[in-house]
Length: 392
Image (spheres, one colour):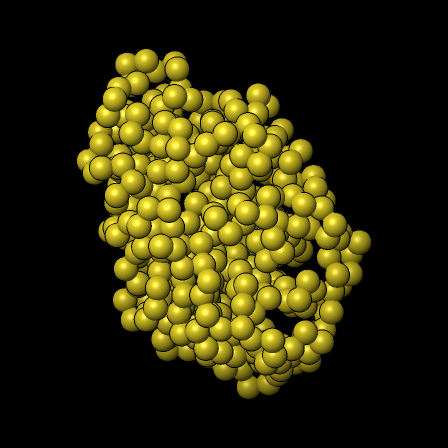
């Protein structure tokens, strides 16, 4: 794997923070309900989590509606052990969250696209990630140049394609790259016709057009409509039936940010990455892809105030940092508004967080505060430190 040192779109996960307000009273903690949906449930204490700390987290969030957290779910040792929903607001208005409410995933959608690339690769439909990206788009012969043929599928997955693209400005700004793509009558041509401003494979630049291109590659490689392929190969094996994938870009939905799922279903997706691509007895994603796609393939500067290693995989993020339980790695998907699926392999734990904090840039992320001040300190047993996912 190529070693890449690049500029970063700074999106922190863990680190020092000022703290959530502590509730004055701590309710008892309950095991999530068993719903015959494939989840095994248990009390937090049975898997080495401090139930009182988790109950204090629940109380603190309910006591501060301004946090605008909508749902938190925790899996440990293969059991769903914490599941809480909170009322709040989002861009559609007031939200009364329940386990049946679908929620925007925003850029967590990209990580779902990564999973589908891995499934297609495992089936032999995508034979090599070193293929030129443009080779999958014969309808644009004028773009099939020696220069553009240096951009590979791997470069697209690691956000190192080298195209001119700017998502550092707000998504409310018409100059934002993803917004420009969504408004263009030929969105894929818009993505592929951006000038190359850096050598492919050398510099990281967050680009919502690249998952759109990869979704098209999946559809063409598998000879199956993209949504049908996602349902057949990913959602149905997980028992996920209530899916909404928004957007209309050519003949595909928005592969960068359009997916909506129920919280328990999103937690199932995270569980795959904790168990080598397996859900109960089914191998849904190839095991080698789980590691390849979530390890640090691109080295990025750590966010301000956060010590440790930080990076990017294949539409996944990576961190190896000091936490309240020691040096652990987090492999995580995240989206605007503080949507998170955080997988801690060394703790045998995955955490799903949904919130309505869209386009908020000021201050430490609330998701980081929840993880550092409540979830991680609750871990009492079976702690494996170290970061085997650091790339070369």
